Length: 198
Image (cartoon, rainbow, N blue to C red):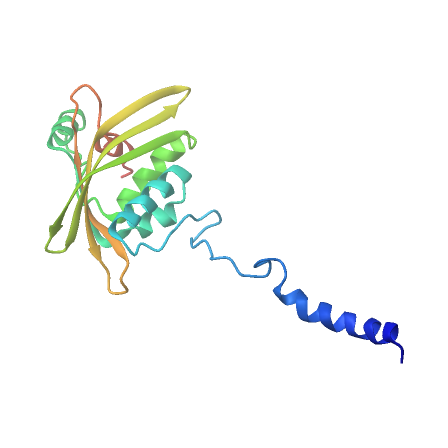
């Protein structure tokens, strides 16, 4: 067997050994995007701030399985007192903010998103964090722009998220207090109240 014949026999073996390492990770698997629906944007909330980011992204993207996933089963929303007083006058006899559970919260958020046809923009700006017996209290300033029928409406205030770490290590929101910070601009809580479905 000549030199040329020997090389012709060896080349396929060299190529077969080289190919699995080629491509700089071409065949590596990607980290999955975790979500309950197509387009899910869930990131495992291993830190307290991540679960708030998940909530924000889910709201803007209209992925409400992920939105509710950010909340604990015993979640409770607390509106600003001025919004409670307004609805007591405008809708007497209706307990607009009563028993505001994770399901009510998710339904109201979905109603806002649907009414705007997805044309909304939420900005949450972190301000402070403090330790509480159950975990963390993280405070954010927010601006929410919602467009309906071509008209943009701004909502502003503060969102105080009470967070706890679950058994598996992930964080979740168990409390949300809305604070109206500008008497001239309605709060997000006021908008939620308007969208509550009885």
